[in-house]
Image 1 (cartoon, rainbow, N blue to C red):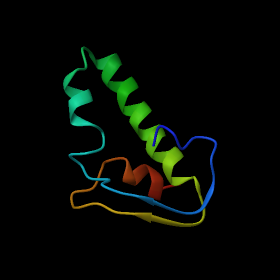
Image 2 (tube, rainbow, N blue to C red):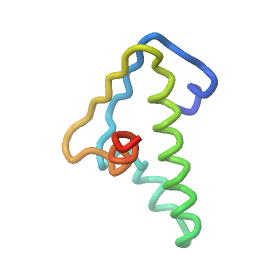
Image 3 (cartoon, rainbow, N blue to C red):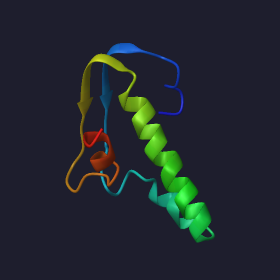
Image 4 (tube, rainbow, N blue to C red):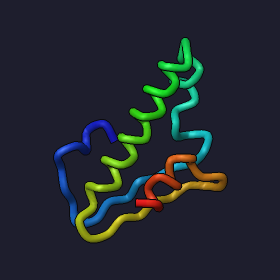
Length: 77
């Protein structure tokens, strides 16, 4: 997802959008305070948005339930 910004493809697949994958649990454990947690969540949310908006015609998002909390943000847009 980090390398996708500025690119566009006819079709994209964003995989493993699971609750225990996104946001990255290892990065969450390293957070020191509430402000850092909010910044990390916003960054992870933005990365998912950027990855999903690289698809011009078709987008496939896959994962297992429960899905990432960030999926609600994408579906609502």
